[in-house]
Length: 312
Image (cartoon, rainbow, N blue to C red; front, side):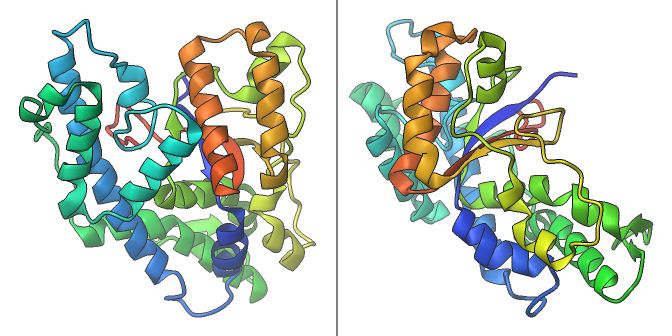
């Protein structure tokens, strides 16, 4: 099975202060409803921006002169972003995140015009896809977190299982809490701050290992489960590997303070890393944006899927 790899700026403060307390069963059941609503809006903005990216792709097939790369502008950067440098990309991400879905067309058209001003009158968004209704989107985003919250509450009540909403299937509460939190936490965080898409064995720690280069600054993603480890110390927590080990997993994490140094060292060794330059560029852009935002960086698989139409 292949890997839909991704590179993420990660707001650990949000995870530690909002998501992990919710998963630990603390606070009210509606404690993250504001984040869910924000994630739904961001999903709609992403979808509309990618409709423009796909429309641009259809036009660019006949334009070899355009500085357009589908693996960067469609299946790489989040939204549709044309421009170079982490500061500019970070600013464009901020603009998309602050734009209601009704305003995406103007922003995406601006991006098209950066390639060629004449294209703004020619490129139209791809109208072939449709998103589910807002309530369905919301449930798809928060549903897994509610199951994990229920598992934590079950453990606190001395129960060993929790029933999954919908089909009523009994699930092992301890297994859910100790094994499923990192991916689902990152998946939700990425719904608020999208990352970069890639494909294959392109994650930084794998590239460093293959090249015999130390992945300095990269560490196991225990920060994604910190509060739960504190609240449930008696559980058998599996080792958190500092690299990707399979599909639907979170690999290494770089704390915000270590991102500038880790990024610099990767750039120093880039000629030794066995990877297309385009993919190395994606890693560097994601780390550069994380540096601009002052947040952490993380590698993962199956957060996105081009084949399933789940784009960033």
